Amino acid sequence: MKKVFLTGASSGIGLAIAQSLIARGDEVWGTSRNLIRLEQLPRLHPVLLDLSNSRSIEEAFKSAHLGAGYFDVVINNAGRGHFGPAEHLSEQEIQKQFQVLVFSHLQLMRLALAVMRARGQGLIINVTSLASRLPVPFMAAYNAAKAAMAAFTMSIQLELPDARIQIVDLQPADISTAFNNAVTRSSQNDPRYEKRVARTWTTVDRNMTNAPKPELVAKHVLQLIDSKSPPSRITVGDVFQAKVAPFIFRFLPQRLRVWGLKRYYGI
Ligand SMILES: NC(=O)c1ccc[n+]([C@@H]2O[C@H](COP(=O)([O-])OP(=O)(O)OC[C@H]3O[C@@H](n4cnc5c(N)ncnc54)[C@H](OP(=O)(O)O)[C@@H]3O)[C@@H](O)[C@H]2O)c1
Image 1 (tube, rainbow, N blue to C red):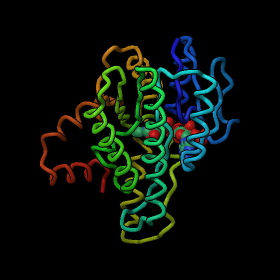
Image 2: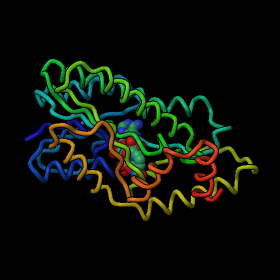
Image 3: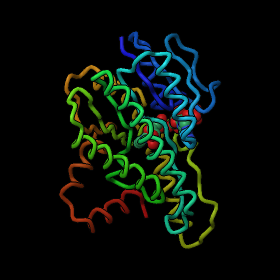
């Protein structure tokens, strides 16, 4: 039986992970900004946590850890996106994205590392995104924040002196969740961007509808938890997005990458 701290357990990928862990007998401390949104499940301990507030993060993790005694696994999953032309992104919106997707995740990773170091073992899974490598148009702050988190994760993988503490960068491609409903959108109306924004959103929305279910990510998370030597990074999604596109992308010059992504999103 594993003890798992999981952010964003109320919806989508986090909910599927919580359900899969609980179904096999693990114990989950699952977070939401609103406890009513968390399903009532046996062995799911509800934890109130808001990633935009560093005090909330510290209190949530410490009180959950006190109740649990230890965590085998900490999963940094919660997050949301912002959609709008990069040219018009306010500094405040960029800061918000970096708080929710980078600084809060780093704070949780530090808290997790401190208790895992004391115990001499543990697994941290940082849910970043394929968008860190194949950016989505009009999601510049999101792409950049996920790329920052992926780079930080790789950096710490290089440095960690203790082989019994493992960190994985889990990069979902499109997964069918309510993620798009929670995306905030810039109100700025700039006619130069209108058509391109609309076309991109159509593609983003269609991809999300046709994407694999979050249970696919949960299945991979269970495998990571059970693995003695989990991979440093995994990409989860349909075969084209998760395997073919990143493989081809690796060998293309930047100009062709930009051209290919524009074609893909119809802009
Ligand atoms: N779905 C995809 O295609 C996809 C692709 C790549 C990466 N991802 C990443 O996967 C993760 C989960 O996304 P999802 O698709 O499962 O989306 P989702 O269904 O919208 O779930 C997002 C979760 O994050 C929590 N959350 C959002 N903002 C929060 C905040 N400020 N503080 C605390 N919790 C917050 C939500 O909890 P409450 O609202 O209850 O607080 C919810 O449980 C995210 O990091 C996302 O970037 C998703």
